[in-house]
Amino acid sequence: MFKTLQNWMMTALVVCSSFALHAQTDPEITSWLINTSSITGRHYVSGNSTPINDTAKANVQLVRYSDDYVYVNSSGIPAYIVGPYLDGNPALATNNDWLWKIPRAPKENTGTGTTTPLGPIAVFVNGVPMYDYKDAASYNSSTKQDDMQGGDGVWNRNAIMAENDGFDCAKGHPSPKFSGGPPPMGTLEGGSYHHHQNPTAFNLDKTEISDICDLYLADGLYKLDDTKHSPLVGYAFDGYPIYGAYGYANTDGTGGIKRMESSYQKRNITKRDKLADGTDVTDGPDVGADFPLGWYREDYEFKDGSGDLDEHNGRFCVTPEYPDGTYAYFCTVDENWNSAYPYAIGSTYYGVVEQSNFTGMGGATTVKVTETTKKFNGTIAISQVDENFEISVFPNPASDLIIIQAEGMPKSDFTVQLFNMEGKVVSSTKLNQGSTIAYIDARTLYNGHYVVKLSNGETVQEKSIQILK
Image (cartoon, rainbow, N blue to C red; front, side, top):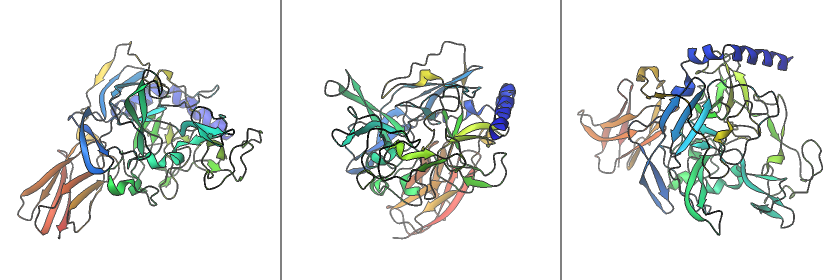
């Protein structure tokens, strides 16, 4: 009965897709964070908590569209600070000159589902690639360890758990890019920065599972807010939107806000000798301290109805950008806001995929623009952009550093000014689009009361703060 209703809803959506997409202000065109102010990337290196300014432009550089597709050019560099990667990863985040192709009228795949591959599986609105759970390693029963080359291909390692020590504060890292083939023959030439998981900072989770932010403070694409529908954070290669962790409780947009829960659960196993469907496979390691439950993709099983989302980690529902309804994926987290499997997209896509976006590990897409397109200039009036977010200013009182933290996802650049009680600007900085944190150095300021003011030309927000040394 549910499947019949779902099919009817999707058929109705396809029939009116052209009208619906245009009636909903074309979010597949207008949601990208287009860099119109020469924002460049920044990165930390190990041992230095002062970020280094890069030359590559951050976020998205160009958006073009036809009736059927949106073409997005990006560097793959976010506006938030990236690095360092403390697991020995030799790569840095470099400009990859990405070109992505997103279907404007996505369709359900009624045949065999397309498996999410290694490498990019989707793209965030800041042009940074999204990867799935895997890191190419699987357990090798001969050597009794995980192996990138000689694994058995059965117990496939979960990158979110295995590579946690190598993620930066924003929960991202680069995959190394080599010229002349893989090592030892190839030469390292750069890195493809990406996220496997919900792109929010570790230190903003209710329970921190990494202390990387303590020395290398950064932020992420957005900040979780359990009182609001999470922002649209990206698009999958089948054209369906990807949202953050919170959505409407009911698929029709009613019922308030709730955390979208995955329907994948950890299996109740201590031995790794069978898949969830009972299939006998090459034995993996016993569950224990070295290989905890969840270490491998096969440690999970899908239990229909146990969460809010289907096997693709999405559902058909109303969202702020799609008031008439759409299929949408969600970046799932647990009650502590730690990333929850399958993190964004399940092992297969819901829709028909534009496969020219696939690259393999570290390569380029094969997307080409062979049709007439229009350029989106990225100049939506600020009044049309939802900038109704709150800001927090801390610590208060402050002594060395004032941190301005925005809720949600700022979609335009904000000027940040610090006023003294005489109304004089004593310090200023910027809060860039696609970043949620700005900093003001308070070390040279006198004790007293001040006002922090954020403005983007139309929206103005103010907070009071005291400096006390």
